[in-house]
Length: 200
Image 1 (spheres, rainbow, N blue to C red):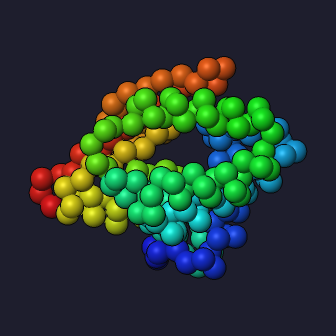
Image 2 (image 1 turned 90 degrees about the horizontal axis):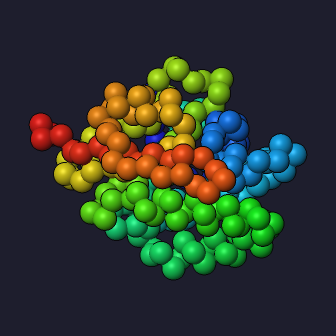
């Protein structure tokens, strides 16, 4: 499978793929539970993260049809700084959300912050495969180059999930649970870390 760095021209395809991929995700649907407004809200949400990680992180896509995408923040956070990410969030997303949606997002981020490791790490913020292409190796192909980079750089990888079934999947790639928390009135969230292998 062809894995390539995304360009600005992939924005619409990445948003569409992630919107389909996360339609049943516990965390994303906690944030945006209404079926009627989900597509629009998800487009804002994924569009923001695509933009800030394309500018100051890493975004990879699978194939010209963008069957999947992975969005990463580097050790130390976005290369353009936390203030840049927050400014873009406020400018492009918050004004379009209802107050309760903002409150749910803030409740989730408090839980995420509490389980995020303090040491520098690559953060896999989003990894999604188009539902029609799941279980065909797309996710593995998207993970492989960055896990190899993690090994070369001797830097761990961190991610969170609200889907219990994902834990065993990520264990196959060397991830282990390091913490968990429950969002008030929301999902349980697990934090997982993969330490770099010593053989690379």
